[in-house]
Image (cartoon, rainbow, N blue to C red):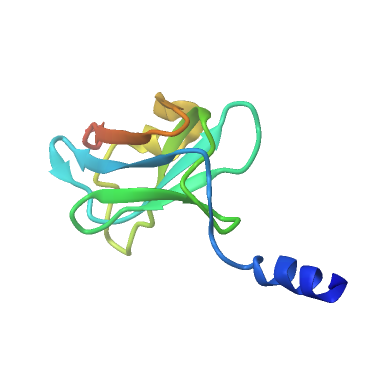
Length: 125
């Protein structure tokens, strides 16, 4: 009986677990979809960060690195993680690459599908 309970508890590990909320949305630059990168969400009160991989159409869905789908409710700062290829420049203003400078903040509400539509300014000329 005890070994069955232990086996059952171990078998439950390793899958994805839902967080308290979901978050998804789109990222655009001056109205045009950003086709790659990561949206990084950093909790204002500590805890695990969350991220969403930006798809070719600019859409993303948030997850955490701990095998948890979705995001914990709370206040978040955000920034865009974007790798620049050789000879390429950022397609948006550099301030969005830093949580401290981006000005992007979001409140994630429990039990809701939080929609984060992020429109970035183009590069500073």
